[in-house]
Image (tube, rainbow, N blue to C red):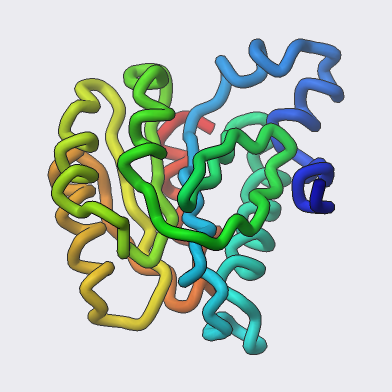
Length: 190
């Protein structure tokens, strides 16, 4: 087990459950936004500020958001596998980008909270991912693109957000991830 799997970020669902002496399930029900975080191999690119990996910068920004909005942001990580991260620290999984499986995984929260996908927008199957996103009837799916400006992934994530009533923003090199997600959390009621 990696340290990322055991670390509890202040403000994460797990930290909030412990602080309020409630179950993780109860805390999850108060969540306003679920972040689907891409930790595929491409998130290993070292183009974030300070020559950090995209993944490391994303983790730092997610931690800041969770601290500012305790118990309001759920974290799901995806690559070739999908995993719920109640402690708020997504592990780096490498591998492919199975966005379809991630969307299937969170389908049950449709109507309970909104979703945001944080990715470089290069899923294994774009068409299937768009079809899955269109299945969400009550939850909007917003997208935060992380990667070089004008990439194909940026256009794909914008299309996915439009197909699911969400917003599409760019976080240049993950530096503005918290800044871009903050309005989504506030709009969701956090």
